[in-house]
Length: 93
Image (cartoon, rainbow, N blue to C red; front, side, top):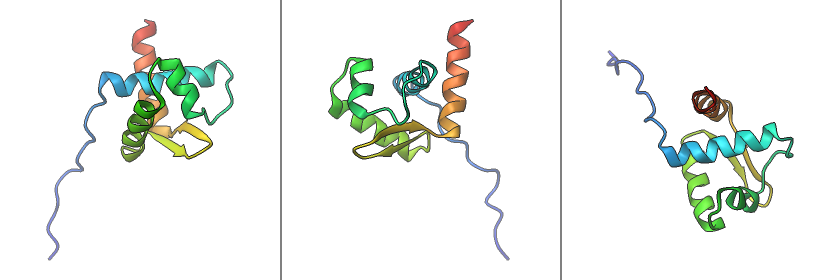
């Protein structure tokens, strides 16, 4: 008999730095910038080095919050859009 693995495990909450990346991508989309956003553009918007942006984008991709296409850029997944929307709503109130 297969064992019941119990309730599904929720993903860990996002950190403030992860949220900054997600809302930066969301705001860039709201401002009419074409998707995907180049990694260099994301780094410039955050005022960080492209290497640091690359490391965080890879982490966010592992969590299923963004899709990164080398030499093209970064886009939010539906899960990333939900997190960014939640954070933006809280900040705009």
